[in-house]
Structures are given as C-alpha cells and as structure tokens.
Length: 211
Ligand SMILES: [Ca+2]
Image 1 (cartoon, rainbow, N blue to C red):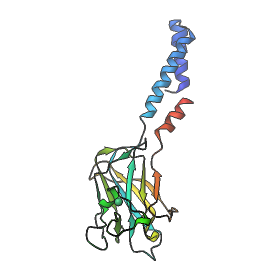
Image 2 (image 1 turned 180 degrees about the vertical axis):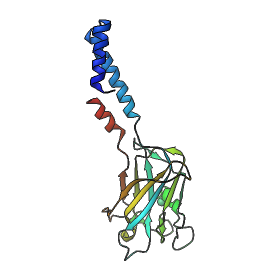
Image 3 (image 1 turned 90 degrees about the vertical axis):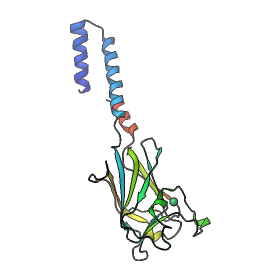
C-alpha cells in the first residue's frame, strides 16, 4: 500500500469513524514507517551455494599463457567474510609441479608479497586452460561483494575481463551476476581488487526514510 493511501485510510478511520485525534494518525504512520524499514532491511543478496569465476581475458595474452590469482574472498552485506568450503577448477591445467598451483590455493588465506617471493612459499592459482573456478559453500549464502588478490609476479597473467555466476543448489542452472569487461586491473603485485555485486542494505533503509 502506498503512503498516501495509507495516510488517507488512517484519517478516515480515526477522524470520521473512531473520532480519534490526529495524534493517533501520526502514531499509525510511524508504525507504518517502522514496518516499511523492517521490510526493506530484509532485502538483500539472493541465496546461492556455488559461485563461478569465469576468466574472459587476461591482461596480456601475447606475453602470458595462463591466468593467475593469489586469493579469492566473498563477503556479505555487512562486509563480513564468508568462508568458502572448496574451490575447484574442472578442466584446468596447472603448470610446474603437480598440486602446487591448484585452485584451493585461492582460499587458503596465504598471500606472498613481491618483497618476500619464495617459490616454495607461493600460494597462488595458475591455469593454462583459463577454465572456470567453482567456489562451493557449506550452505546457502548471500554474497554482496568479492575480492581477489593479484599474483606476486607477472602482471600479464592478471584477469581484466571476467564473469561471476551463481547457482542456488548444485546442479541447477547458473545465473549471471556480474560481467566485468576490460577492467583496468592494477599492475601492483599482491594487490586486492574488490567488486560489489549487490547494493548495500543500508541504501534501502535510506530510501524508505524519505518516503
Ligand atoms: Ca593463497
């Protein structure tokens, strides 16, 4: 019900039927606004259990034959990290020693900085096939934003175009949530790149107050 219609209804009931004062009307309007705020704060990111990161393009494919990132993180509307259960890379092909640059390195919380590069300590995902990374959560989650961390070396491998898709339950169809094209990914090493895929819930509360 719109605000004007609601106010008119309150006036009609209070004044012409119940004989109440206008104060009663104001109380009802206040209750209505509280209800409205409550309703809007329920609005938020939809639920998904899996997310897919699809590499569309890397910075310099003529100089690099693979994509790479050090970390990938998801956050709720309050900016609180949401723990990923697994990160898989179906069809991917990692270079070098088997098992070193697997997709689980994206969610281990380890970032190696350029100043402390040690091949034995690196914890990054590399993929010569540039195939999709599937992030799975233990249950349905509401993701509002995500971020990833560039590798400690070779900016040519950084993603500059990608897509994020969500899946409600494993086996369902994927829903495209965000398409990023020709993003000016920083050339800084071990740098964090963050993106919002759902507006903050605070925005909805703000709109409601001015109704
Ligand atoms: Ca890592």
